[in-house]
Image (cartoon, rainbow, N blue to C red; front, top):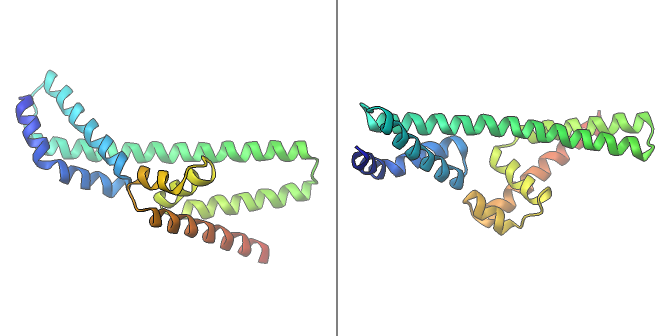
Length: 171
């Protein structure tokens, strides 16, 4: 049965990748999840027969991609909370006024909301550049996109965040 799995997987590999890419929007992640799909199918075949291997592969790939997105969403939420907590601690140590703290918190919330509105790829590119210090070339390779796409995504994030802060300042 592993030979059948190999054949079916190779026949449908591109379609599987496309299915996963539509969900995760990251080429490397899609590749990893497709490989994980194959391994899961292989492990399942060791314990039981799979009646419809093709359907099993596509459903497993979709489920893995959705699970990945859910975990990423939770991870981003916690990373944002940690960043806010660190900022609050820094404010407390800086001796700023309560009003300054409130204004800073409002700005932080406006930025978080602005970032949440953007597509995952743009947020990821911005995070990798601004927080991880990665180059556009590294980000492009990681995301499986052109360097100019990374530039445009980061430019879009920066503009969106500036607009959000400008709206806050007007109010």
